[in-house]
Length: 529
Image (cartoon, rainbow, N blue to C red):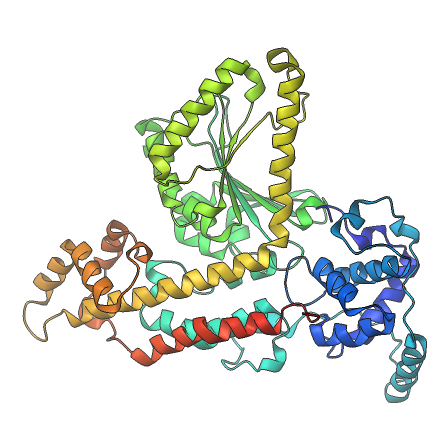
């Protein structure tokens, strides 16, 4: 199914009313989600084979959330209808010439009688109930409020993301708080402040750093879906509870004055949120004129995005000191990075070959990775390709590259849930290593005299201390934080006030990684597996 299109948009209003009633019936607990158990009971009324229903669920739950929302439920119903008409269940059905607007609802054996019984019982129990309930939001939406209880029952966990929230609150967060992980790495609940944006129909960030000879924007601009065209200043965006940008307040008013959110109604933005960074300028003079931590802000966004696009022009390939720092700050997010060589139709074939080689050479010095980064070549704008430089073959190349880039973008929502799991596991491992480091520094402090001198010595020899921790607990050296950054933050703390190592807390996180997360994924896999 293409981004920007969806079955609900191709479904008549009369059919939407029918599907809404079906959805409310299938949603046994009224939380607005059709879980695997709900689906197996309801889908069985279609009399399709288990293999067909397995494919239906796999396509409808393309984001692997572990449940079907109202839109996904309609998708599943339309797929079932097509299978009953003799079609094969494939992703290509969404791109076929099927008239979804007039596609009749599937035949569900005995459903009319079941709905009639429900209407009768509803009128008997509550005469004011008209049977047209809207799907209700999940109770997990209030888990992070100040009034929420610490313990969350398994009955309220109806998706993979809910399960991760529960594990975070009950098992990972206590370790983070004890060893002040949020002060060193990222704020508490960074994943969950972004949750409302990430796991609904809006699911991802794209971060672009644009180097170009033309004048570029001087601010960070977030482009999001909205009911109308409007621009919201950064200071306002940062304090809105329904937006995931409260963590940006740590960069101060100087940054927030260079930050804004642009909202507009567009089907694409229901699936993807874009973040455009200011142009990265060359020269020390331009860098010192910034009144905020540019590298820190880009790093903040990088930790929360699903794809990072670095944009280059063929006429300016040099990587400035500032841009090098930005790329270095992206370390740990290498799998998200894509490079775009834009305006490639402004040079001829021979020049483009040289430009591509120069770009790869420059990136190789900065990225420090044996793998070759993916580079998309083309002219990504609304103007026709300049065929005079390349001819028909060049135009065909650019069109294929553009298709590849769009395909990469379209995959973002489908991989959103997998990305959340990946980021959660990375955070848990980082918190564990952080706890070992902090407790080690506490252990090295004297009981009475010479605390200040010992602390300074530990900071100066921090790389050696990391090595001791790594050997003692058999930890991967590549998982340790940046030494210089860690030194900078440590200077503001008294080591003797750090907590000693608490093996039970470490064991809880180990059990979470070894047992709880695999069990969670098993519980919310395809119910027909």
